[in-house]
Length: 163
Image 1 (cartoon, rainbow, N blue to C red):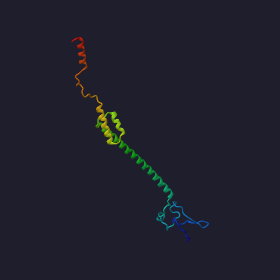
Image 2 (image 1 turned 180 degrees about the vertical axis):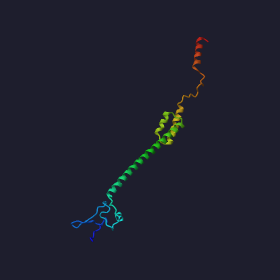
Image 3 (image 1 turned 120 degrees about the horizontal axis):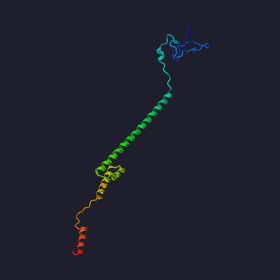
Image 4 (image 1 turned 60 degrees about the vertical axis):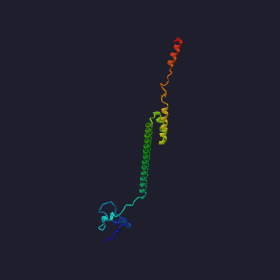
């Protein structure tokens, strides 16, 4: 009987020898019966683990990490925009509330848009409301004047006509 060597990595038994004496190894994935002797089993082939290309895996994980970072940055940017929009909406609602509370005109209410501090906004609104009351067409002694221009004219005419 001829002794056929077993491959150190794959565990497969050689098929034969070349003319120069080197063993002929079976090709993995070829015919199931070719190259396998009775003493090798399918379990021996399953123990072999393929070599992992760590450099390629590293690049793949770097790409995934970069994509995740970009997504996280986009999410943070969207969150910041949403928070800013909510803050602006709150300030706008507060300005309108103060303007209605003090019964300000549209032009006076527009002056509140530049102010962000609530106390300052309320103080300005109170001041604008007080100024609006002073500028009204209210005459405090209207109708209290007993002397009129018509009675002076009538007295002048009477004096001229001798009466």
